[in-house]
Amino acid sequence: MSGESIGINEVYEIAREKFPEGHLKVEIWELGLRFVWESELKSGSAFLQEPLNKISASTILGFLHAELKEPNYSDRDSTH
Image (cartoon, rainbow, N blue to C red; front, side):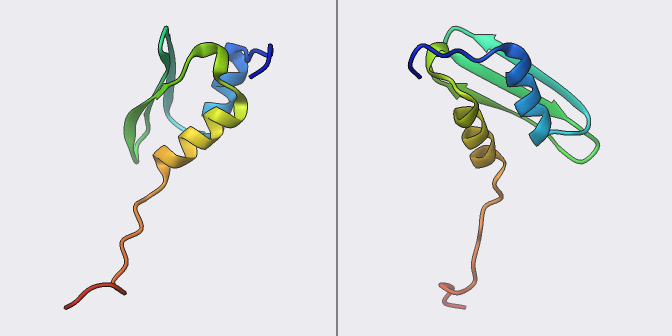
């Protein structure tokens, strides 16, 4: 990111879009951001390890999308 910075409010709003219900916590570390979520359906945490001055809205969105993506197991390659 060239000289731009993202505020904690924007970081929280982006995370809240991905976790609209339940509890959400965003921790700021020297090495990146840690997202912790808990709802009636699921809970978890994920750490975005990236220098703080390199984190953008698109970085967060891409990271959370990848973290939340369900594995796609296919029977097509099965030899059963």
